[in-house]
Amino acid sequence: MLESQGLELELDFGLFPCYDWISTPGNTVNWWKLCWNSLNVPKSSFIYWAVMLGRLLTRDRLAKMGDPTSMECYLCQGADESHGHLFFECEFSRKCSDLVQQKLTIRLNPRALVEWNKRGRRLSILRRRMVCACYVMVVYLIWQARNKARTMFTVIHPKVIVQQAIQAISIRFWARNKAPIKEEDISWLNSLRSS
Image (cartoon, rainbow, N blue to C red; front, top):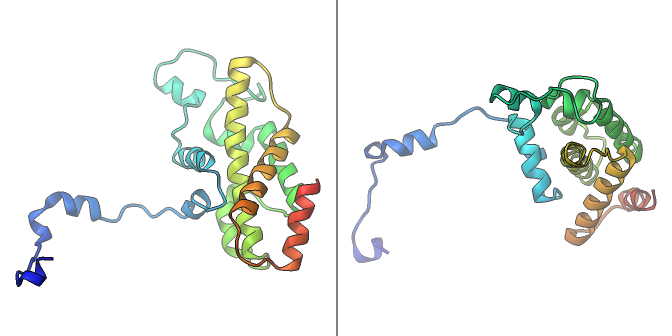
């Protein structure tokens, strides 16, 4: 609008020191595509983001803040609860991971999901996005199961968690998809529905 009036507006960003502070590149993370996948349910993306940053209030973080309670994991009662333990090393989360891999007919290390997504080129983009979205949803549901175990003293079975995750992502996919799908991907998606 200013140009149409014959005025030129030049901004010297050196005059705005906060712009330099905001625009300086920080650490580049390689997990953002998993976190903000369009198939993810937004609440699961937020929890996954918090897990990757180590910001959930697990017992080890609460202990650092001065909470004197036990450090024992609510889900397995076998080790101290931390982000690494709760989502990757806990017996409960390992069972969830194994069941997801079995249902989705894949084999991968959950800690290396980002690398698997990069090099998993023999799978279609749709399958890779579905697998990543299911894992993000499983992380959310593990956190939810942990909180339920903390408050209600009951632990949800890993089969229920995996079933809920796959069902939620499948429903979201079918509601959002408008692009044509290959026949082998359709049969794979239908096999997820039936199981």
